[in-house]
Amino acid sequence: MAKRYRFPVIIQRDDESGMFVAIVPTLPGAHTQAATLDELERNVREVVELCLEEAESRGLTEFPSFYGVHELELER
Image (cartoon, rainbow, N blue to C red; front, top):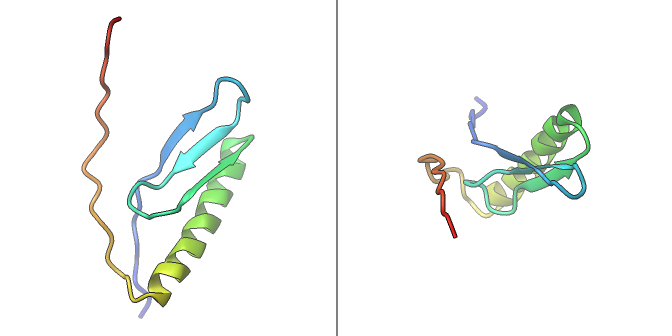
């Protein structure tokens, strides 16, 4: 039976290039970018598959839990 994984994905937009950037914080090495959100979704799925293959080849099947994102505001 296949194991089901669920990963949080943080998406940012680079102001200079306009590219969308995705980071999967609980999966080392899983990050990608794309010009559109649809393309980003495909790219994230692909990079997660590749990172999972690498992790599983080393016997890793459990990954850290994602706790959350905190926004910090500073005035300088």
